[in-house]
Image (cartoon, rainbow, N blue to C red; front, top):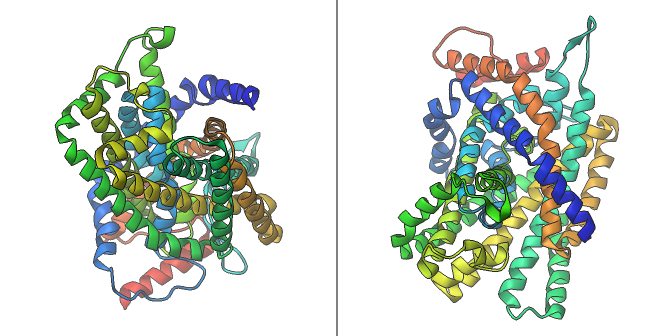
Length: 511
């Protein structure tokens, strides 16, 4: 296991998560931001007013039943956010700070700013290129806009890039399994840290086995119900778990409020530190901060991976841009709110106890312990209990969301004829890997999933860059129609589906 870990770590640090992928992720976000004239800034208010604001206002109101094949926009968002708001927001942030220093938080913000536009584009393209099978079930995701959107003309013939879509699907299945194992591993680690502080190996083994059985059983019960059940569970759990975390984090930050200015100073100073860390080259500190900031930022908000769009594609929303606006809010909420609060709880607790002189990497032993220590040092026993509730719930909702992503990837890979069987087989394999993840060393699981995430991102980034012009056209079309201009709606890439959706919207407007 150690030898494999060294190989994977070398690949991640020097190839997959080195300068090329960082440039690709950041470059894609910059290209989309420029071509869309900073849609994440111009339409941020629209994103709030057309997504979370009306959702909050509708709380308690009875929702009209859909067609049974799709879910509401909020349920789709909840399913997607349950996949993004997970242990990456707590343990992932702690991992970034330990490995890349506090400056990694700054680079998480940078990646998230451009990730707002990236995630918006993914959702727009996802809905525009999604397909409905003979049973009326919606299928969507990067594999569909890769296959049906990218059709280059080579040697006088239009070529299909279905093979690239299949590459994405394979990587998505691997990333889903890896993500599930990471979450299961962190549930185990959290409970071991809180229940078995003495570190007894036998107790740790018992906890690991119990966690594995519980996670596998609960996951199986939910994922069998498909996106309808996942969306319903997520829409009930996500708002409450997020609110609980925000309240607890704000309490910790308020108690350590005098350390807040120093925490921000650490973040910005470390982000641009030119010192040679551990004998590395001059500027190595910046490189490590960027590497872990981007890696953990993408792990957390998934902008550029193309995963969360798979859940968004199941929405009953007819307008691609409307679901794209949910994507903007999703990344904002995930990184600028949840991840920032996590970073501040850790840094303010650290500063309050140690000042700014000691190395934060010595503040606690391990990623789980660093986050947990911030809770316990400030809130005592209540902090321990709160952390033991928050992190496992975050992790579990991520597990059920990623099961759906992997299932859809498997169905695409094996075609409509074998889609049901492929989905079922993947679910069985997925829940089995959770048990492995719960019982395996955390460093190995994190390294493995970092590798899968990078492989998954590459084909998606290619598609996003080449289809950025299509995103601009669809966006302009939507806002032209909102201004009252008489233009043909761009709702689907397929003429029949576009006409059907346009007629449905027209009928709704006439009611």
